[in-house]
Length: 85
Image (cartoon, rainbow, N blue to C red; front, top):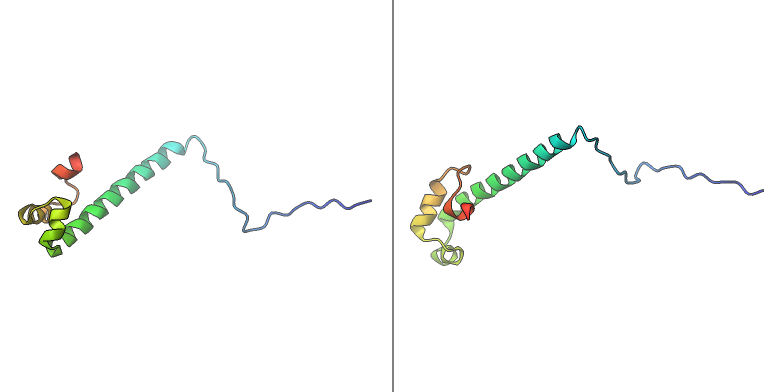
């Protein structure tokens, strides 16, 4: 008679986590917050880089030197005309 082998789950086996319906709204809120933080971080990084960009680079992204200065001074949490579009 042949022996039956029952596979033992290895600790490295990928698991499919299940999320209860009670936690779904909370996870959606976390996803929204992460999106805001990513956008704010990108805006902050752009504001840091704008003063050091050449006129050619600014022309490539469609900004004049005066618009770049104004954009760099704007708080990162406020939308600009470019973000609203």
